Image (cartoon, rainbow, N blue to C red; front, side):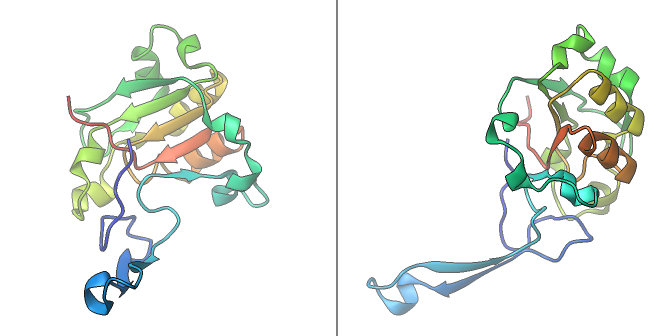
Length: 179
């Protein structure tokens, strides 16, 4: 489910470019040396999680969240085929599950197809489907443990705040293989 991180890979346009630099190489210095790379990128590059601190002043950082909270069942909701810019609403989420209880204490993973479109294009950067604030509220009301999406952002600031204040864990920039 992870997206690769590599030199100049697609990234949130508000973040610095991703840079990989080879500091030492076996080829350049001989077999007695180490291969060493310098990586420069924002912490929200590639597949990543958002801690409450990301959006909420005084919120918990990742090291404050017990590892066990990141474990649990997951439901993959297939939203591939949505039009660019579509906001995933509570009604749309409910329509993909047999009952709302199906996500209680589980992760709800939103497969929009944008993970397969990952590229430095205006459409990918600015027009991805995302979770609407009422969809975030629905996940909170139905006690989801976490939510993930296949783009660098789950949604706008309101969506982040609703999820992270409860806390519903957020995983971003996943990749769901095409079926």
